[in-house]
Amino acid sequence: MSAFVRGGAFPKLAARLEAFFVRHRHKLVFVHAAMFLLFAGLLAVPLITGGTDADSRHIAVAARYLIWGVWFPLVFLSVIATGRSWCGILCPMGAASEWANRAGLRLPIPRWVQWPGTPVVSFILITIWAQTAGARDHALGLAIVFGSTLAAALLLGFFFGRRKRAWCRHMCPIGLLLGVYARIGAVDFRPKQPQPGGDRWTETNACPTMIDLPHKTESRHCIECFRCVSPKAKSGLYLRLRPPGEEVANIRDHHPNLSEVMFVFLGTGASLGGFLWLALDSYQWLRQALGDFVIARGWYWLGEPGPVWLMSNYPAQGEVFRWFDFFLITGYMLAWTLAAAAVFSAATALAAWLSGRAGGDGDWRARFVELGYQFIPVAMVSLLLGLGGALFETLGAAGVSGEAVGAIKVLLLAGGVIWSGAIGFALLARQGVPARRRLLPLLPGIAASLAAAAVWYPAIFAG
Ligand code: SF4
Ligand code: SF4
Image (cartoon, rainbow, N blue to C red):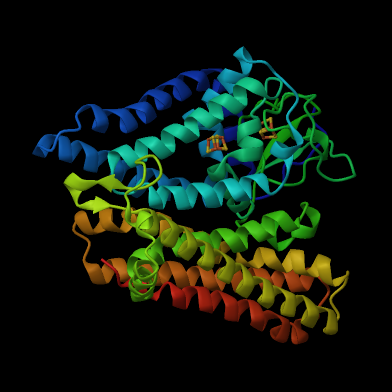
């Protein structure tokens, strides 16, 4: 008999899901293999058929829509309902990295890989690279960026870790995103016999993402592989369903940390920049002004096209980036990344100070880190609008009117702002701020969320 009480929402459903996945988890290898073939096909087939005839163009467009318009947005939206189920159940890249690990050298995972900022840097680099290499619009660009990411996952798996997924835990840019958003998701794996002391990293158990299982309190690294779950055992983990947002509203019990908060801030800016350089007139003004400056100084090498692995170089499709474009897009996106981080940081700093004045407990830094988590819903919507824009194009192509698509975007943004405000309210409650004094420390966060929503205005009515 298990001594634990499952609790949470829909405990019977959780028990059934748990039993189902435990019974069938040995078959996941076939799912992963099928997904690997599908993934490789989506990247390779448009290149193989890569002519300019109508059929080839249709294949390339279909592959792009499947990746950017279906897979990318749906994976991110699914996190709210099912956590990182994509990672554990479907993702071919993570599975391939683990396969490579089994055949590989199994060296100790280097400290630079384990550095908490590594996936943040990885996300920003890949996001910018996807823009400069034309991964959204060109089959070759897509294959270069995703194929290189897969190669990196395989190489890291081959060299480092012992029967683990070092790539998924430490370097995958998508995994970091899913991990942060899994914190607001409805799925949780909890130890039946939790140990005090908080989350720890370990290579000495069955968890592929190196979670010290009895100490687990946070969801972000759990890829839902079910390897730690044995319904009849007294120890191990169990599946628990919960109201979305529960973990973040009580983040102090679930290993809050500054690197994750900074990722939320920087990642929102990167996704804003990734959309706005295409949508705003300011980019074109800047391009004109800096172009004149470059010509006046005779820096003509900046007008040369660059290598196709780094930047769009597709004369047949009428898109050739010069080094000038490469540096400008990169600089523009980095500027938005830093500007968004500055705005969110300033708002959170002010909120943490006001919380302290209103009776919030802990020191200013601890309050800052906790309150930074209020922006996760707004950040998630930003990512959806910025990097998952093809979803809305897909809706348009499916016959949904432009007004209806705009209304969906407005609703998403409004929902993100309201949910962020609600999480901010709950975080202040956990800090001990009395209800009647919460409005003032809540205002900076609401203002920053509204500012992010306002910047998305061109995205709402684009296309
Ligand atoms: S962390 Fe990345 S590579 Fe690993 S399973 Fe998740 S999405 Fe796939
Ligand atoms: S905690 Fe359990 S379900 Fe989550 S990744 Fe580790 S072994 Fe898999």
